[in-house]
Amino acid sequence: MKNILLILSFALYSIGFSQNHAIKTDDATVSFNFLAKKTEGTLTNITASISINRDALSKSVVMGSANVASLSTENKGRDEHLMSADFFDVEKYPKMLFQSTGLEIKDDQLITKGSLTIKEISNDVEFIITEEDGSLVFSTEIYSSDFGIELREKREDNKVEVKILVPFSK
Image (cartoon, rainbow, N blue to C red; front, side, top):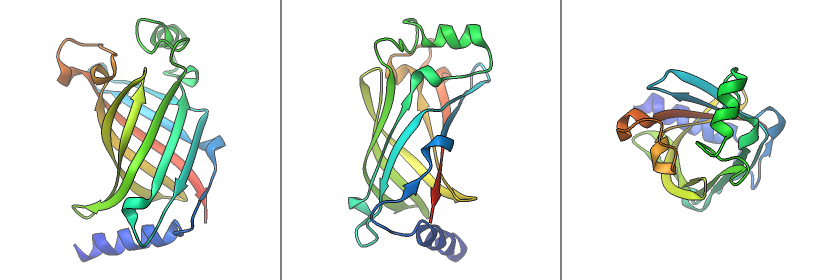
């Protein structure tokens, strides 16, 4: 447990606690794994802003967006279908958005809570934050059906692992 707290303390120190972090969104990615179909993909064209208040983590802010048209599963036909009105409807809903409500340490992990919006449907999510090789990594699991993207009948069969990688400079 001490090691986990030490790692978290180092991670918090390494991201500098500055008011705003210089993040490299040109290299940022959102990767996803739709578990039921074992389909992986990425989104690029990310914008993000991170502000950390070391004296009150709950007042820290993480927000960002991803351009849905940047979606790639390395299968052009599948990508076009996913961007169609059948799924993401990129013409009507071009961006996915996340707005945090704060950061906290929970069960020895750094967590940001907030609202994820896909297709104008917002749901509360929690991302576990880690630091790897000069990048912040945000990890969570969501259900596509919670955002109006029903790929399977059962909610559990719509589970998607999400990992966001945001390089930063110290």
